[in-house]
Image (tube, rainbow, N blue to C red; front, side, top):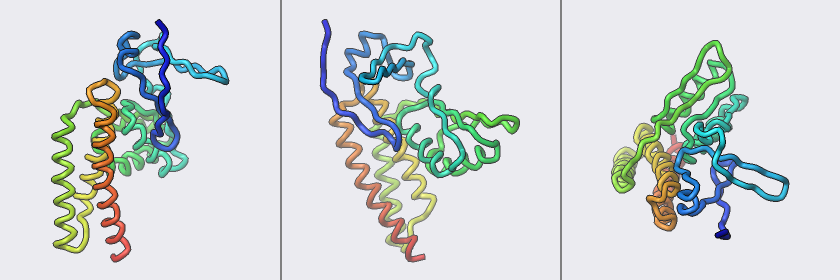
Length: 214
C-alpha cells in the first residue's frame, strides 16, 4: 500500500542536500548503508530506486578537482562527514599529494592512492563502526586537555587542537551513519551534535584569539 511522508531537506557540506528515508522503506527494498541507488530527475520530481548496477555506492559519483586546493579540501571534509567511502581526485600527482597532506590535518583515517603517471587518484575512507559514547568521552578528554593548556601556557597546542578536530569530524560521520542504519534516533543525534558543536565553537574562539595575539 502506498505511503506518503513530508520530510525536511537537510544541508550536507557546501554543495549537497539530503533527505532521511524511513528505515522500514529501506528494509522493504533491501537497502542498507553503502548500497548504490539510482537518482532520476525529470524536471519536476526526483525518484530514487535501488541501482541495477549494484555495488559501488555513492562514491562513484564524487569527483574532486584540484583547481582550488581550498575548495577541494572542503569537498573532502563534506564527503567524509556524509559517509562516502571513496572519492575520485582529478589533478596532478604533486597537487594530489599536497591535498593529502593538508587533509591529514583534519582527518587521519584515509588512504590516498595516487599515481605519478595519472591525473585521476582515489581517496578511500575505511568504514569503522564506533561506540559514540566512547567517542564522546575522548572528545571531552581532548577538549579538557586543550583548555588546560590554554590556561597554563597562554596558547593552545596545535597538535591537541588538530586531535580534537579529527575526533569531531569522525563523530559527525559516525552520527550520520548511525542515523542511516537506524541505530541512532535522529533527535538523539541532534542533541549530541549540538552539544559537541558548542564545544567546537568555544575551542575555535580560543584558537582564533591566540592566532591574533602571536
